[in-house]
Image 1 (tube, helix red, strand yellow):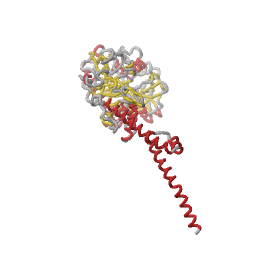
Image 2 (tube, rainbow, N blue to C red; image 1 turned 135 degrees about the vertical axis):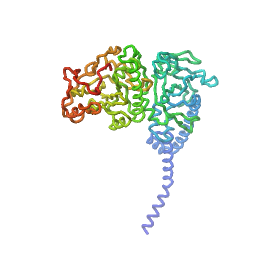
Image 3 (cartoon, one colour; image 1 turned 90 degrees about the vertical axis):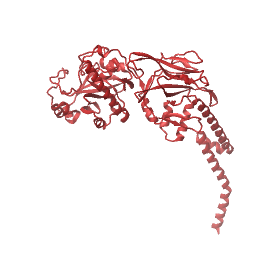
Image 4 (cartoon, helix red, strand yellow; image 1 turned 45 degrees about the horizontal axis):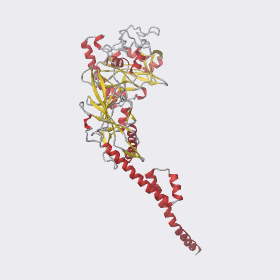
Amino acid sequence: MRTAGRSASLQRRLSRWRGFFYLVGALAVGTIMVLLITQQNPVDVMLSSMEAPVLSLQLILSARNGQFKAREEYQQFGQSLQLLPPGTFILEDDFLSCLASTATAAGGEFCLGILLEKDVLHFGLVVEENWSPSIFDAGKAVSRRFCTLKESVQCYGGPFCKEPNKSMTLVSAVTFVTLAQTHRSRTQQQIFDITLFREHAAQYWISGARTNQTHLECTGSRPLDSGVAFDGLYLAPQPAKVFSKIQLGALRSHDLTVPIVTPVDPSEFLYQLRTSNYVSCANLLSNRTFSLVEEDQEKLFRSRVRSLLRRIARILDEEMRVPWWLASGTCLGWYRQCDVIPYTMDVDIGMWIEDYRPEMIDVLQAKGFDLAYRLGKLNDSFQLSFVYKETKLDIYFFYKENDHVWNGATAYHAGQKFKYTFARFSPCRASLLDIIVRVPCQAEQYITANYGRNWTRPVEDWDWRVSPPNAKLNGFWTPEQRSDGVIYLNPKYYGKESALAETGLPLASDATVRDVSSSSTTPAMDVQTPADH
């Protein structure tokens, strides 16, 4: 009986507190709703809710009002988006990084908030060659306040011009002020900056540059120079850019009247963005003024190089996504005469050692590149050479140090290691033989380091071991290391020397340290051709 009485007493006490528990639960649910809507600090919200239950309801109402205001801002932003020509896509890298990090529609909605915070929004638009900004007709509110950016382009057979050595005027961008918008209780006008892309070779989008020489023609305003304020906002110069064609899609939102066009794969776009800046060659010389080979041989070599570059670009860029660039003599020929150096008879490219993959050799061999040699180790002076349809491709791997980068090379006869040091550089896009390639952005600095200040003057006597001003002897591969496979020569191209190289025994044509240029025999295919690289 005592037990039953105690149980009844406990039930009466619980019933007295039941209403309180319901109230606390309701406040908790309200707090969670506030957190989801306002993203406020949970501790502050909980304390406020406990101190004054009525405040929870006020917070919910305030959050709903804020949501309505945000929806109004999105609607105003959507009205501005309607001013964009069809097909205009967003180019804001932090917005696309946000999209790349989320795979949900809710995540996409969250990323849209980034666009409202910006004073200048960057877009892209692929246009035809004869495109005109007349699309901003007089019927649009923005028509009195937009600028076209016109760039004078001197063409050296690059992607912008059909005729070499001709100049043309290229409309590279359109910039305009949007409709007035209310954002966070202040009225603002965003600038929409549209970079115009032209299609090249059916697989690339290329934009013009914006420099201090770019001329701006503005409606309803005086002409301005690039790099100055436009309606109080700064428009910075920007380089020309090249992208492989991007698949576009639409990001839709309940709060926007029109969708935002974005790359379907933001990660792919961001990967390209890192090396999308375009640089032009200097075109200081013509091949025919100093060529050491017959014109027919020169045309044949150029045709073979074009075929090789098109093939290697497809493999490394599209299939393996490995950034690479023109190196050594091929880079010199591109920059100095916007062409290949016909008497070098090979193609040189570079890549970072961290981008090497174990399957790279097998992939290239499966695509028609026959391995001619493999020299060095992954952590020291690694290099590869292939033969593709009678043209040799040398791949030099670059190593990053504190304030410089370097690549190595091996004289396989003597087992000597050589080191070539450069100031740090980053890869940019360029055009060689109508193929989109990469080169060091700081091209002249790179070439001067490798060929000296007289790189503009062709030379006939060039030894890759001692001629480059940045070359130095960097030790030797020991007989044990050579036996371990740091020197592999394909017997197809090097015959008996390939077997001797792997044993670690001296070769018949081994050079001495004091006279590294001497050689009594020449293999079927020299490892590095002593020519004007």
